Image (tube, rainbow, N blue to C red; front, side, top):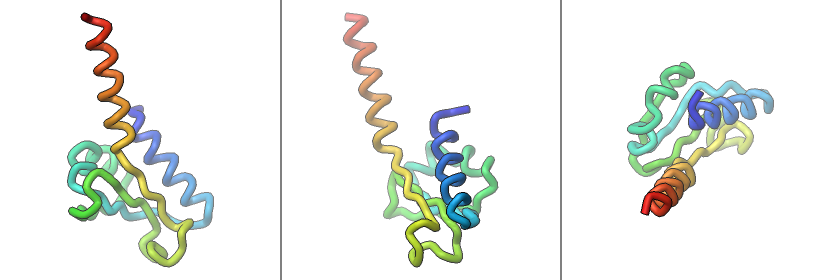
Length: 95
């Protein structure tokens, strides 16, 4: 299971534990480019929102924007930066 899929499942589990039903994913185009298959495998309704770029908001559509616990925002930037960091370390090792 990919690191991203684990992250998505954890966010969904947290929302469910708070008593909500996460059924939608509002995703930026960059997030969709990287994680569309993972999102589809989770059975979420997916909406691409240009302004989110490489972020996604998973949540219960009845309460998004009304109750903080009804959604979670996930950013790919830290994951992308970490991959680039490890890539640079590998390049340095190979010098």
